[in-house]
Structure formats: C-alpha cells, structure tokens
Length: 285
Ligand SMILES: [Zn+2]
Image (cartoon, rainbow, N blue to C red; front, side, top):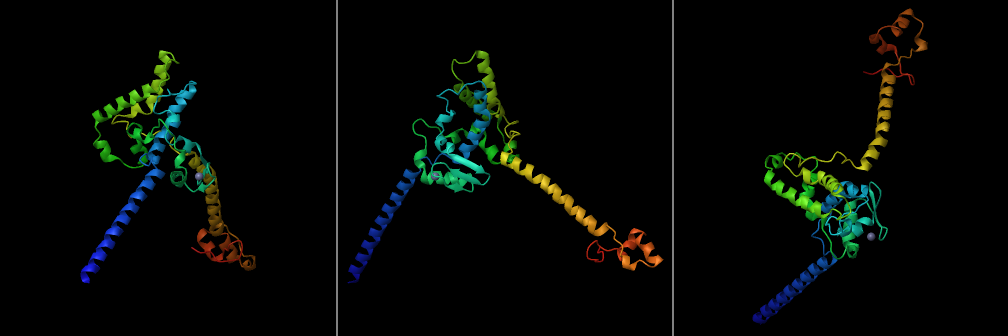
C-alpha cells in the first residue's frame, strides 16, 4: 500500500514538472514573439539618433542632399523610426502615443507601451539598430554626463580609439551621396559630418560634450521661473526691511521731550519705542 502511494506521488511530481516546463517554454516563446527586437537598446539608440538629428542630417539638408540610401545611418533604416515618428511630446511630462492616443509621464513609459502594444510597428526589411554604433557615437559619455570619468581618462588607449576612428570615417564615407556633389563639396560634407563624431575619437577629446546639450524644455523652464524667483526674493527682503527697520512713532506716547528724542535718536534707542506699521507690536531681534 505504501509502495503504491509513493508511486502515485512520484507520478504527480513528474506530471507537474512537465507541465511547469511546458508553461515556461511557452511563456518565453510569447515574450520573444511580442518583442523580437528587444536586443536593440532603445535608450542607446536614442543617444545615437539625437546626435544624428542634431549634426548629421542637418549637414545634408543644408546642401539639399540626403545620405546614400545604403548608408546604415539613413533615417529610413532605423529599426524604431516608425514608432519614433509617432511619439508626440506635448510638454515636458506628457508623451502621447500617436497610434492609440494614450498619454504617459515620460518617454521611458511610452517606449514600454510601444514594446507591449505596438511591436508590429517596427520597421521591417533591411533595418539597423542604432545602438550598434554606440562605440562611434560615444554613448557612454552621453549616458554618464556629470560623471568624473577619472579612471577612464587615465586608462584611455589611443591606439584603440584610432581603430575606432578609422571605422567611423569609413562609415561616414559610405553615407556620402554618390555623384551628386563635386569633389570639393563632397570633401567639405565629409569634414562636417566627421567633425562631431570621428574627430573626437582620441584620448584628448573623447569626453567632450557638445555645448548645446541643455534641453529646450529646461531653457523655457528657467526663462519663466528665474524672473519670478528674483521678484519673490525682492519682495521677501522688502518685507523684512519693512518689518525691522521702518520707524513709526506711537503718537499717543509723544508728549514728553525725552521720548521724542528717543524716536529721532540712534538705532539702539529705536527698539524700545518703535512699532511696526500695523498692529503696534514691539520690535524683535
Ligand atoms: Zn499606443
């Protein structure tokens, strides 16, 4: 009887083990199906994308040109380009999904929403994960803004960065529009698109950040808040000065010559006779 009980228990354990395994593999499959490109970091891709928007694409637009279609940095090849085009930032803490209208407090939560609800809106075909170019676009420097980087600077290896610089220059050359520009114009464009990326890949300049790294929202915030702050400060000090230093004699006490002298006397004598404008309270120090 005991033998049969043990056999039954063992069968149940084995059955539960197989069910748990099947459930686990199914769950993993679902996660991979829902977000097949979760290997491509969104925050790092964003760092690269922002640099491209600020420096790279502008250089082409000024010359009425576009990067070569086979250029990996071409905006049409960015894995997240469709989703990025459907982000709306209404103000600093309101991000709206243009696919369904849902609003979020931060870009991070909107990104999570894209992963969970709009995974089908990833670019298909010949796509590029911009985070793969982080070594060239110095994502580590942008991500650790404000950090000292003392040891990184001390341990910097120039030859390693030289190899990276050559890769960067080859990448930039592959993006030049073929045959549309003269040799001189092509050279100028190359110099321009390399100046904020490849030319910084050396131990001296690697940790330099562009001066225009302050977000536009911060500029607006400080522009609005600063005048109010100074006005509040002026009002505060005026109130303090008014409370402690403005003299108002108590006319009921005026009668004796001695008190009148005290009212018009030195600073020390004021404390006993002067009152605040309203309420007649004694001065406190
Ligand atoms: Zn949505």
